[in-house]
Each structure stands twice: as C-alpha cells, then as structure tokens.
Image 1 (cartoon, rainbow, N blue to C red):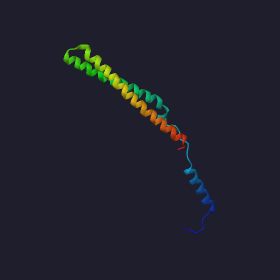
Image 2: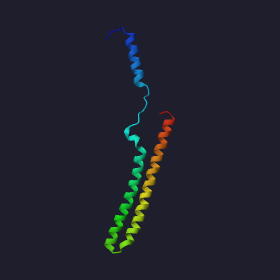
Image 3: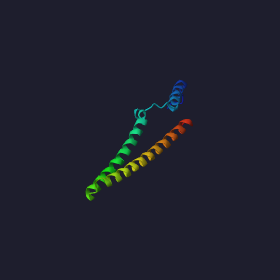
Image 4: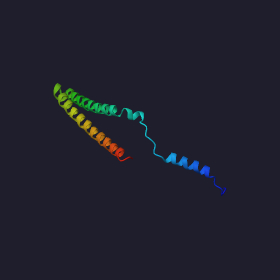
Length: 109
C-alpha cells in the first residue's frame, strides 16, 4: 500500500461516509397506510368471533338439553361480553403503542 494518500479520494470517501451515516427520512410503508382500518377490522372480528363462539356453544347445549332458547341467549350474551373485553384490551394495547410511537417521534428518535 502506498504512503502517499490522495486528498481528493479521501474527501470523496469522507463525503460518502457522511451521506451514508446521515439520518434518512422514513417513508411510509404500504402496510402503515392502512393501519387505522386494519386495527378497526381486527376489533370487529374479535367481537364477532366472541359472539359467534358463544352462540355455537349455547346452541349445542340447547340441542343436548332440549331447553331451546335458554343457553343460546345466555351464551350469546357471554360471548358478546368476552368479545367486548378482548376488543377493549386490543384497543388499549394499540393506544399504548401509538403513544410510545408519538413519544419516540417527539424525542427525535
């Protein structure tokens, strides 16, 4: 290796290093574009699945016991309550994630 270093090449190398280490603007990904809609659909699905499972369990118990509307009504209400509970937990987790993201952006990270 030569002891004679070319100052022009060193300057170009320094410019490349500075450009590579400079913070880049973050572009929104396509998945981030629909974040609000996907969160809303997730909650709707959680509520629907909870109620659907409750109705199916209630209908099965009604079929086995012969008490037609009793267990279907009870378990559909329990399934609705479970769906709302899961939906609220998801909303809380998403809110905490959004607050953490906003705090990171505020601090310049």
